[in-house]
Structure formats: C-alpha cells, structure tokens
Image (cartoon, rainbow, N blue to C red):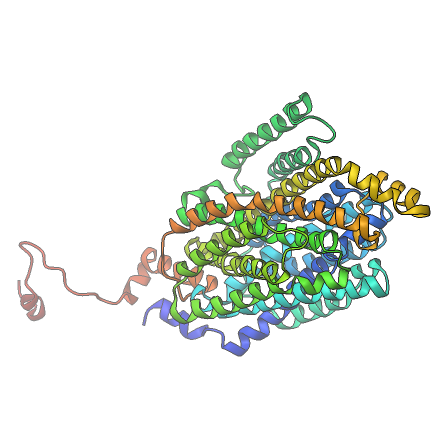
Length: 564
C-alpha cells in the first residue's frame, strides 16, 4: 500500500457534522464582523449629521474602514501562511470589536473615521482568514454547499443589521449601534476556541514586508485623498493633483520593485503568472465596487431621496439582500452538486451590469417596485460572483500559497470597493453641489415661504453638514430629494464600465474542474509524493503501472521465465 494511501487511512476526511462544528466559530465570527458593519449603515446619515460632518466626511467614514481592510488583508494572508491561523482569527475578532466599541464614543467625524480605520484592520483579518481556514478543512468541490452557509450568515447580518440599527437609532440613539456586537464577539471567541481544530502546520520564521506595507498604504491613501478632495479643495488639474497622483504612482512602482526583490513579499507578484488569479482579481474589483458602493449609497438614497427613517431604510434594502441570499445559497448548492462554476459567474456578472445600470436611472419618485427589482438584480450578481471568485483561485493555487492567494483576491475586491466608494462619493458631492446651485432660486423661494422657520433652515443649509432630509418642511424636502436622487443615480453609472470589464474577465477564465481535496490533504499528498520519489526506501511502495518494452531487451515472456 502506498504512503499516500496510508496517510488517507490515518486521517479520514471530516464528516458533515464535524465540518459544521468546525465552521460554527467561523460563521459566528463573520456574523460579528458583518453585524458590526451593517448595523450602522442605515444610521450613518444621522451619525454624520449629528457630528456636523459633510458629504466628504460621510464618504471617509466608509472609506477609512475599506482602506485599512484592503491594506491589512494581504498582511493577514501572509501571516496565515506562516503562523497559527486559529490564533490570528481570534486576534482579528478582538481588534475588530474593540475598535467598533470605541467608535461609539466618537465626538467628531475625525474620531469616528480613526476608529473605523482600526475596525478595518480586524475586518481584513476576518475576511481573509475565514476563507483560508475553510480551505484547510473543506475541498473546493464540497465548499459550495458550505459557502451557502456563509452567504446565509452574510445575508442575515446584512438584512438584520440595518433593521436592528434603525430600530436602535430611533429608540436609543445611534451610539448603541456600536456596542451591540460585543456579546456576539465574546460568544464567537469561546466557540472558535472550543470547536475549531486546524491541523498543525510546520513552523516557519515569520518575515513581514514592512516596506511593502508602507508603500502600498502610501499609494492607495494618496489616491483616495486626491479623489475625495479634488474639485473642492483644489482643481482637478493643479499642482496638488500633480504631486498627489505622481506620489501615488511612484509609491506603486517602488512597491512592485520591492515585492520582486523581497524574500517574503506582501503580495507575491508570481501569483499573476496564474491566469485564473489575474482574471479573478480583475473581476473582483467590479464586485467590490458593486457590493460596497450599493450598500453605502442605497442607504443614502432611501433617506435623502425618499425621506425614509433609518428603520424604514433598512426595510427598503431587503430586496437586494434577498437577491444576495438566494444567489449565494442556491449557486453554492449547485456548484457542489454538479461541479460547474463558470456559468453562474457569467450570469452573475450580467446581473451586476444590469443592476448597476438600472440603478443609475432611478429618481426620487421612481416606482419602488422597480427600484426593488434593480436592487435584487445587483444583489444576485454579487451573490453569484463574490465567493465563487475566491473558490476558483483556491482551486488552482499552490496549497502553500492558499493564504496569500485568497487574501489577494479579497484585497483587490476591497481595494476596488474602496476606490469605487471614493469615486462615487466624490461624484455625488460634485453633482449635488452643481444641482443645488442650479436650484438656488427654488430653494430660496421655498425657504422664504417658511415664515418664522426660514432663518433656521437657511442656517442649516449654509452649515455645510449633511442635511436630514426627512425632517425638512414639505416644500424644501421635495427639492432636496430630487437633488440627491439625481446625484446618487449618477454615481451608480460609474460602476457600469467596471461591471462590463468583470464580465470580460470571467468569460476568459480557464474552466478548470474543482478538486475534491482540502488544502491540508493537498499538502500531505505532495509531501508523500516527494518522499516517495526522493527516498530510496520509498521506491518499494510504488505500484507497478506495467512493463515498458525496450529494443534489444528481454520480452515479457522471457522476463517471466527468468531467461535472457
């Protein structure tokens, strides 16, 4: 019997029940992450208004988390290939929840943005490590059915979070949104400790590419700050633009050079030799823009363009989450049953294009049934593409590089979402400013008709802070609902070309079958094969595959008789 067979007998695959037990802590950890993020989504307009923040502050409250999530994701992925993944996952939970709780004490937009940035560091770990650990215990072929569980948890948190956040904001105040995840986090830490048992990995000397981290952070941060402030604090074509964009390009080029020379690069550029990885990265950027952009700006649309309360806004976004839930769970089950993944990715990318374009056509008085259909299409597109792009990359990557490969795709998805939200936010702010200027006469007339409340609303609008549209008088509210609806729909148009690029990238993905081996089994198999062919004693366990006839050599019959 071969060595690999022996190994298979000694370490049988985990049963369905054992897998579910091992995943329970991961699922709860992801639920904590999603809940803490989504519970504030519907109340962000209220939070930014109460902290006297403007549209730029609103964008940065979201972008800060996405930015640090994107930058920290490959760091967590690299650490996952070098050290204890279970401890790293628990550390990520602690960082995330402590930063989230601290954000509840913010007194101004700057404090809130800072704590949200720290929150993103933990979120990056949870996003990267959950995928890596799942690959340790479940094969790509079987992973579809369990991906559905992650999709379901994500959907429950994404549906329940905004609803819970809206209720808490309306009943207790928005600060309590940041504390609600604490009991779930404690439960997740305990559950992970008791149920998650990952096979021991050989210890390696950990080397962190600190120079790469600084360069990557510099390049991305400069680009995002420029996009957010250009056209407002300085002209698009100006000296400030030159040094900020130029600095970002220089940092990016030096980052590539450093990664090529580093022994333990933050993002191994050799991964891009894998066509599946490269195309999945391109497709993930569009998915990130659709996923993060829609969650941010749909909430603003419901409250600023349709006058909804935070609770109502949570209810109104259910169609999108329903699409994400059905697509994620349904497609995951189909992938496991039939082993085919590419058709679902293609359909999902088409849904991304359709949903993004249709949402760019909405107005403040668009029939809500149509808005719900558009949201459902976008949610279904995200549900079909997000997890499956990670799946196909894990299927083709080296088992020793699962961590950096998985986190690489997640990194570019987060980076795409970060840049997308920044660009969409800048476009929204610029569009709203232009529309307010164009409607100046109508706004003045509406204010003049408010009698003794005219001065109050004039001061409110001149403060520059994000308005609370739902509390405005009817004549003023209709004007601003129309303005914000036009601005937000204009922002969604930006996502359309990226969704088209995603479709093209997915169309050219190599349609490789999913393996039925887990990452751990692949590593053990490769080690067994190496030992078999490299150790003389191991040659005896090789199974004969047949006699190879040679010219002038003995025939099979002669060999059997022992004659020459």
